[in-house]
Image 1 (cartoon, rainbow, N blue to C red):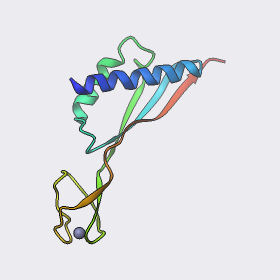
Image 2: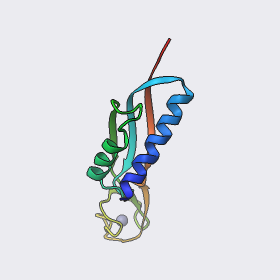
Image 3: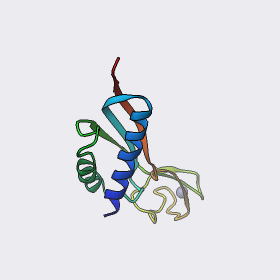
Image 4: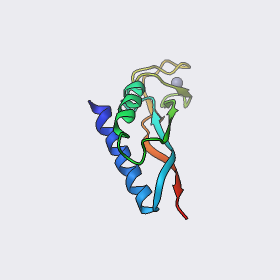
Amino acid sequence: MHEFSIAMNIIEIAEAEASKANANAVKELVLDVGTMSGIEFYALDAALEMAVKNTILEKTEININKIQAKAKCAECGNAFEIQHVFDPCPKCSSLYHELLSGKELQLKSLVIDVDD
Ligand SMILES: [Zn+2]
């Protein structure tokens, strides 16, 4: 399962960051995931739920920031929301465009608890 290995990877990075900061818990974790990153959101959700078991992220609130893919038309310069790679420009029907966003898959932020 593609999403599971991604979830494991994210949790590993988060754990490493948390231990670097001497955190004993992670309150919140925010992910940026683009709608054209190839990720199934429900599958990633489920995978993360499994991946946090027995880690310091077990009680962490995980928020997935869904980033709507946007493209810029190569013919008329129109920027529009895109659902599929081959969606035509709604203005001029051109199939040539450049993806502006939507491929994101990254750890955006981590809110940690530090013992003092
Ligand atoms: Zn266009």
